[in-house]
Image (spheres, rainbow, N blue to C red):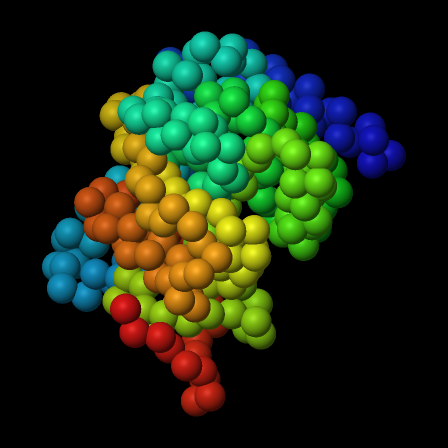
Length: 297
C-alpha cells in the first residue's frame, strides 16, 4: 500500500512539474490569497517571529514583510517541484553561481570543504553544485517521519553527484570517501531547530537561539574548509549564488567559531531581504532555561 501511495504522489508531482512557470505562478497567486486571507497558514507564528526579530520596526513594516514572505513562500512551493523536470542547463540559468572559481580552488588543492547555508531563497534549485564542483556532494537532510514523503523528497532532490545523507551518517560517509581517496564537499542547511539537549546557544535575530553543533564537530574532525552560500533572488524563478570563504581549515579553530561565523552571515543575509527566509517555521519554540549558556557574538 505504501508503495502505491508513493507512486501516486510521484506521478502527481511529475504532472505539476511539467506545467509552465506562468501557470505555476498563477497557482501561487491563488495559494497566497488562501494562505494569507482565507485560511491563514501559521500566521501567528510568522508575525510573532517577525516582531521578535525586528522589535524596532513599526507594525505596518512587519505586516509588509509578512505579506511579502507569504507571496514568496507560495512561489517557493510551486517552484520546488520544477527541478524534477528541468534540465541541468535550465537549473544553471535559474540558480546561477557568480563565483564558482571558489570551488575550483579547492578542487585544485584536493581539499574537502563544507558549504553552509540557511533556509533562505529556493534551496531546492541547488541541484547542480556537484557537477560544478567536479566532485560528489554529501547533502545533509533530516529524514521525514512519513516514509512516503521521505522517499518522495529524496527522489526529487537526487541529482548527479548528490548523496542524500541523514546527519547521523555524515561522518561515516565522508570517511568512506576519504578511504577511497575521493574528494567531496558537504552541504549543511544549518539553521534548523535542534532538540533541547545537545544544542549550542547564541544570539540570532535579536533573541537566544539554539543551533545544531554537528556542523561544527564534523567540520573540525574532517578538517574541512568552510564556505557560506549567500543567495539573492533576482526575480521569480531566478537566483544568484555567491560563495564566501569563511575558513581555509576547521581543525584548529576555536570552539564554536564556525557556528558563530555562520550565524553572523545568515543574519546579515536575512536583514537585507527578510521576506526570503522561512518565517513560518517555529524556530524559537525552545527557550533557554536557567542552566543554559548563551554564547555572546
